[in-house]
Image 1 (spheres, rainbow, N blue to C red):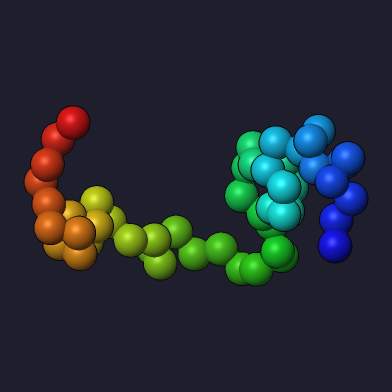
Image 2 (image 1 turned 90 degrees about the vertical axis):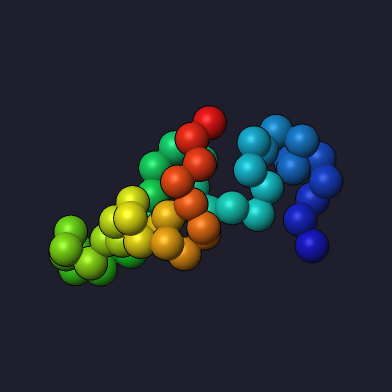
Length: 50
């Protein structure tokens, strides 16, 4: 188990990295594989703004 003294200084305990960027796992990148905003709206019901 982690030392509780060191966890106080961590902004994201248990998370790899510092939370400022996505983790690079040396995977090939294909931008066409990203989901679109329309797909998100369809999946989560919405066109809600705000």
